[in-house]
Image (cartoon, rainbow, N blue to C red; front, top):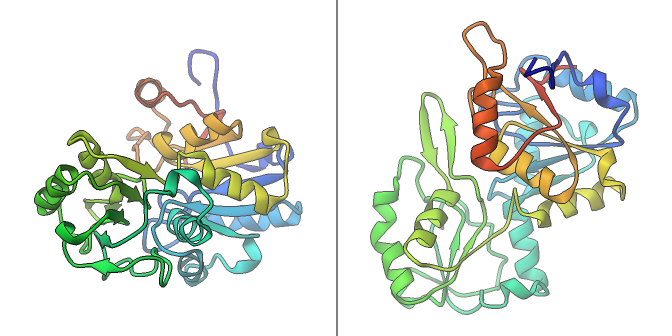
Length: 290
């Protein structure tokens, strides 16, 4: 308990009846990048028994179909959800639609930061792909081309893009992701550095509201207080839910490492991080379970 204000949930069942739609983050919430966490399948079985609507929301720069295949491989079949929204999929959709005003600058020759690793974020035929920043009119940043790469590997290209005044479209606001015992950079880290250098960046993905509104469309729910965002990241999952008016549940075992040595939630550490990110979950749970 935190100062008489908050208790850790014993399971999602305790608040399931308060919500009609559920949005689940993927990495760090339902799986670790390799396999599904214990008890997670029971959560989705329980929600489906209650006829709840479910959407997965990921900052992955991959298309929803690719994320769906990954979820199915770890036991979260299509029957467990009503749709998948990804930052990469929304980027692909919005570039194809061409109706979002803030994306107007993103046309003409494009430089891709991850052409081999993330080839599908850019819609076919939307723009000619060039091999160097010097030839480009804009940058599509889906993340580094090879997982071990660091910011230093991109520093020269980022500086050149800023010097040329190229706008950057970031298709994954996440800055890092845990992989085994390492922490790898994501597109958000490149975007953060680009912005620090003075570059112009537009983000698609959590915590920005476009992807949250897409989830609500799939859920078919207009009452935002009946939607629960379940995630492990204060900076993206919880901040985004706070901003758009959804309820939220933070999984403490995720990216912030909010469990002490006895697997209890370290509420004092949580309070510090809430102040850092300006985000506060409505509920907290040690790990996702029913």
